[in-house]
Length: 265
Ligand code: NDP
Ligand code: 8X3
Image (cartoon, rainbow, N blue to C red; front, side, top):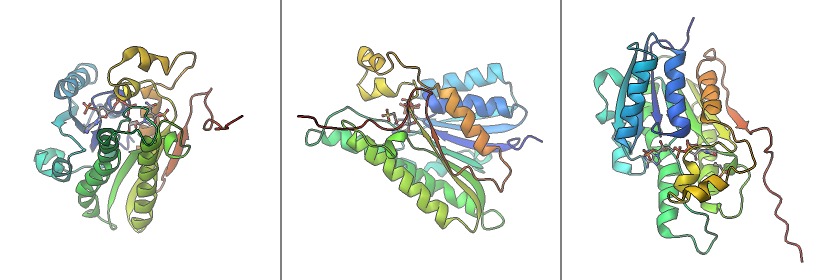
């Protein structure tokens, strides 16, 4: 039996990279009956993905594209009001929207970069989770549904020139672990997936559209693909209800651990 059949899945940051692949992978995994809510700021990209799903998977997958900025607390907290009735019974929430801005070191990090990273990666994820949790909590046995948070190796192994991004992902990790404990008496699964290096628009966004600088991040290495992470998300969401893939760290083969920082005279 396909455990994803008939589910409603909401994915933030669905317009690119890991979120886009996750949308396509969910659609492929349950082509006969699935509802997808795709959330991001770029409407045109969301519509392209909806068209791609309709073309490649067919009409069994219904898609609702929602233009929403998760970093805006008013928009994030009222996300349920923006969904048509048939897309409100969410079973799986994938909190994936996130970004790094710049590579400045303290004390040179701009207010704008600090706010963008924290409001998107931390406040956005918390606000979306709080907005959708009541849907899960209304179900039998104290509640049922999946919350899948995309953290990062950066939340476990902080690095120089990424302090705020690393702090934001450490916050995701603490929030995720806390709510898993809060929800222990329910059937709600709280799942974190922490990717290592994945080639997406991440570096392009970090370096404000400087494609040469973004490409240099991946020179001489073989990063993960967004599809690699999407497969794991689908795997976690399609386990038997009593199986919680609580926490997963994923590297490409040639990455391991954080850089050793050693000042030598
Ligand atoms: P991309 O830049 O390709 O995708 C990021 C997605 O987040 C886009 O769809 C973007 O959509 C969306 N997003 C950003 N800000 C907002 C916002 N304020 N409101 C709504 N949506 C937003 O990068 P990735 O796919 O790599 O990133 C996905 C997640 O994976 C992030 O949380 C990232 O931190 C994490 N990650 C990435 C790694 C990597 O190496 N790439 C490694 C570890 C974790 P739009 O611009 O249309 O709003
Ligand atoms: C995104 C990848 O290299 O900044 O989480 O940790 S990295």
